[in-house]
Image 1 (cartoon, helix red, strand yellow):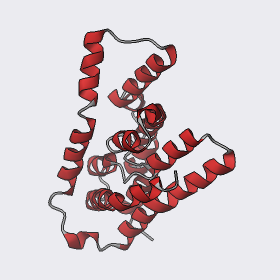
Image 2 (spheres, one colour):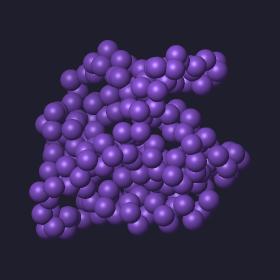
Image 3 (cartoon, rainbow, N blue to C red):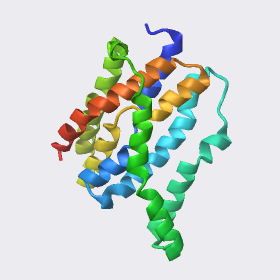
Length: 211
């Protein structure tokens, strides 16, 4: 029953979590740096989904730019990181130090981006049934389902806990950007990103209790 301009946006918001900007630092903080490899693999899948299925949801049948989908810097970086991890190769010291310095900027930069998205939002704009539904699915229902399915499948605690955290992140900032670029309801998208980010301050610690 949602208006046409909102349907793709709502699915996009429910489908994609903020597994990069927020996922990486939170996985490190709660589970430890050794678990980051799971977040990198998850983020590679996220980028493919965002630039294929995500674009189709908002592009209204106009197709996908596969070059953009498969050659995003984040996806290329994830592939390179996996190659280095699996082969045991190490970058030269000057490159290694540069990458580590840039990597340490992830948390503060992500907070700046999310904070910029939250600025200017009126409290009344959050009194929306659809935003509440997206928040419940994104922050509570999906991560609990993930945890339960992972238990049934017998996945290792490392994979199970990392997946649950990454699925339980707030709506991805790219949802708001895609909505703006492809003509979706950008107000709804930005509002959901803001609301779920604020509510995640409560839900993420509660998810961590499962571990």
